[in-house]
View 1: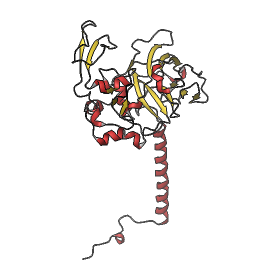
View 2: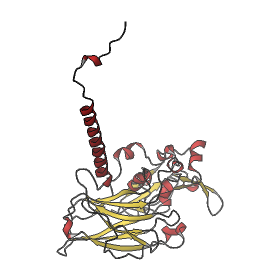
View 3: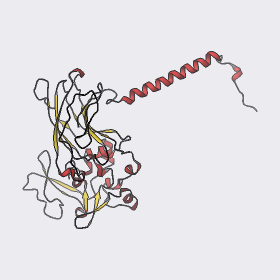
Length: 346
């Protein structure tokens, strides 16, 4: 569940498979195993368990300071977002706010399109499909960053906005047609009574503001904030940036997605403390998940493939250069020799 990484070091940490079975990413690592982040025997009810654990790790003294922005990713191994049926399992019109659904998109979203409630009534899932309804819903909270002198580092907070593509937020996602919300000055003035509001109680945002809101067809629809209340607020809905990041599917089964970033330098020797609420099930998919803290440089984050590609292309170019050099030595050809000219016949 914890990984430290910079572009100058190898991964150093543990992958969590959802139980207390841990796999060290670096066999030489001296990190201790972390317990308490397993999600239990029944992953179908993982989010109701509210399991949390606290993890700490130290920025290595011999690797230098982490320069801003310090990136916080979650890593998932052995989860195939590139599977064709999985990638097609969404309704673009629904993500853009439409409340109607055609037969083609309804079929693509199966079996996560309509479900029955306790009374046997059909409830439509909005947004539907496998991508939206497998959202990574572990919650990471940066509790503190303590410098090597034992003093907390000022301004070391994890920002969770600005992590999604601006073009995605602008053009690909909209709240449902008819959605409405209103900020209230106090709880007493934020009643949800009346047909113009669908909320049962006001929503209290992290900044202390109360909101009341209306979602159309709320009695027969389960919206994203109801499926993932630990991640998505009713005011954000599908505009939640963690959701937007997840919806941009990965090309490979082992991938990382940005969770947040810290906009201050973190000196070597500092200790970062995270609280993890473990919600996302990995047992049934035989996957694993990890928390990754990294910085970046001119070419972005650490990527072994970039160096490998440069070496491979350089090697191929060297071999071709030697080959053509040998051909030129063995079968020389005078530059501008007219005998190689072929004229077009009349």
